[in-house]
Image (cartoon, rainbow, N blue to C red; front, side):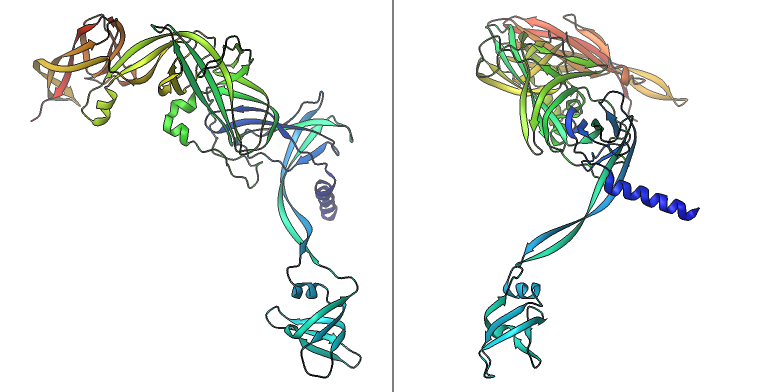
Length: 521
């Protein structure tokens, strides 16, 4: 019985190694995320033997995401088999010099002259080479015996008859195979089989061009471009889906056991890291219909109507029939639309005296954009123009459909401000901590924000003051909020925000807040 089992397994192994048809699936569809991962769907038509076929184009997939499928009706994939085989390859290597030619043709008949003094001019016979390339003799068989002539003494060498100028070299190479078992297919029948996997190596980088229009500015042309980076595999006539919103893949850093000996490769995430986590966590996919409705400008292109699709928390743009070889990059326009826009000055004031806080506390000139489209805007770099003139670049953050967002352009020169805080009251307080009384002081402070509009026309200002403490009051209908994620026992994180229009000249805004300060001993 043991021998019968061994023979059966041997036949099974030989069947897989020799008779299984091979096929070469290509990427037909791919969902691309901004973090360097892509869900690929590789497909090709193939014949099968007993339902089996294999490919050497094995995806390096994430754990739990590799599976086989069939697009042929009534054909189902039931099994995948990953294996490594050793293949041998024979090829001719050109012989580099005369010594190697003579070694390769040992046993042939040779004729040559030699500069030795034994009374002979020509030596002829069947030969062998004795020694190596550094010190060798030609051993020529004669009627009376064998004569040994130093290789360096021979000249006018002639090989009688045919001779070889190439050497056959055999090489062995390990090959990873992924076999697919299709149920319901007859031998010789063509079926379309595929392999899907979450892989690393294809990414996309979105970028906006925004052209503000009018005086005053009332609208802007916003254009989204997708830059596609392919470091994974050649794509031909592939449908590419650019994803907005990256789903969570818990095992994205673990390779599937079906990817034998594989290693993740491809695109680094340097750009994503430099732009922050929000850049990679809000990505878009699109269906693009390129129909120019107005004349193109040097900055943003003509008006284009785009289709779109969504999948739960994701949004998709689709690019059809894309050809992109491994190592290539390309860009394509996803949409170009006109949206409401206005100028705005933005000032966010945080506590602290560090250089970083001082830079953050600058007043910015920006564009307030209304997302009047039916699609969300992904996080991406945005360069802004007024007509054709570039006015700045910054990061456009994720903007849902129907929402407003402010794109900071440059530090303001036409609106300046000054911020001061003055203590107006300090009261002693006893607060119990861990069952013991602790001495605190409840300090009441008044903040004054002085703004100056140097324009002749009124300007809109979005003013935000972030405070560690409790906001008591604010003038000019300032909106007070608390950060629910950081409700400290004594001093919560609080914000007061104003969205106001101020005329030319000066304007003062006040607010009062309280903060507990532990009394020093």
